[in-house]
Length: 187
Image (tube, rainbow, N blue to C red; front, side, top):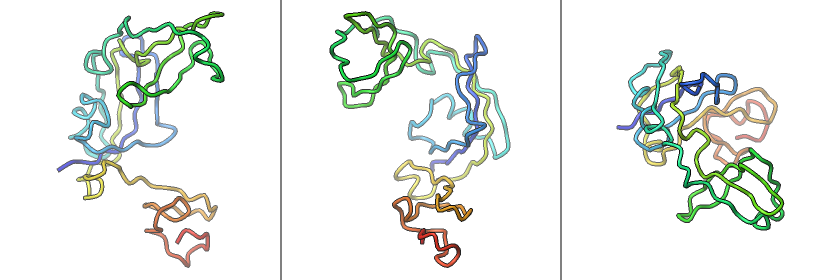
């Protein structure tokens, strides 16, 4: 049986201490275990934590997003980027040969060429996650099947209620909200 883990995290470069990202201000993430939705080492580090527990999880680059690969840098003619706003250090998204979405970093722009880097921005970095688990429970049948975690949702109708399930104002079916409670149309 898969688990649903919801957590807050702060991610740092384990060697420099540089803060790479955090969701402590923006809200928890949720994932279903066994679905390859987060790094395997991170999943292993949190799957047995209970709600309210914290952990510090260090993941070596090889087990995180891999070592930096110099062969993943490519120089392309600038005209291939016609109509696309590019800046050095900027991130572009495209489609790889396998149909998957790929992220590239623009490393250098000259009058004739653009150097792009297919390495993930965290490639070659040992990662340090500081996590706080907010929920750890068995996945329900839908979550098990789809891998999608039901997250609380605040309706934009302005009436101040929250929906715990998809609802009509966002294209769903209105579960968890009484038609007579606010008249927002989210029933």
